[in-house]
Length: 198
Image 1 (cartoon, rainbow, N blue to C red):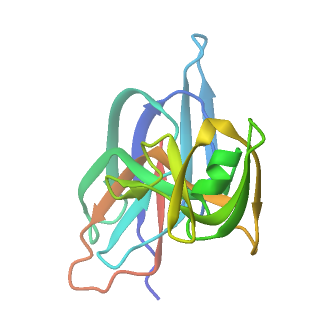
Image 2 (cartoon, rainbow, N blue to C red):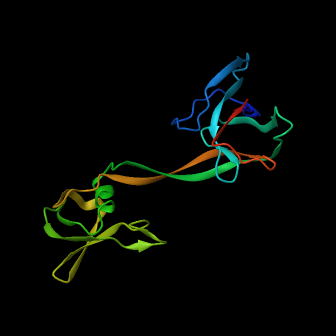
């Protein structure tokens, strides 16, 4: 059986631990700390190879110089290119306010109490702007018997949802990524391969 090729990417970076560790997080193998507080960190391990034969790493420390060097140990599987940058990644997180609870439950039957003590029941209807329901608006509608009552999010005192409410919302994080394009030749790319960056 042919050993898996190793791919290494070198990046001069500050010491930093990714905010959330994922499946593509490589363990630290070596660490050199300089007197000025900067460090050289070597990460190495196995990472998933996608259907295009590429390895994408998205849990990376912040580079100080923004420069990196990449290579493979095997001449049979040269590194064609490396692309790095930032991309938006959606993740679920718990709702943190009554407004987020309302936004997470469009179409749900609810009873709303405002700061002024007004109590209304109906179906939550969000205003859709730029393809995102509830995004960019400061109010929503509570629909009851064909009537639509506009309620501003900052006047909410209590929200009671009849069915099981959705208690999470989608947050968008901007994360760094590095994509390694490996030339597998005529061979089929493996599901995982050894990679590293420094």
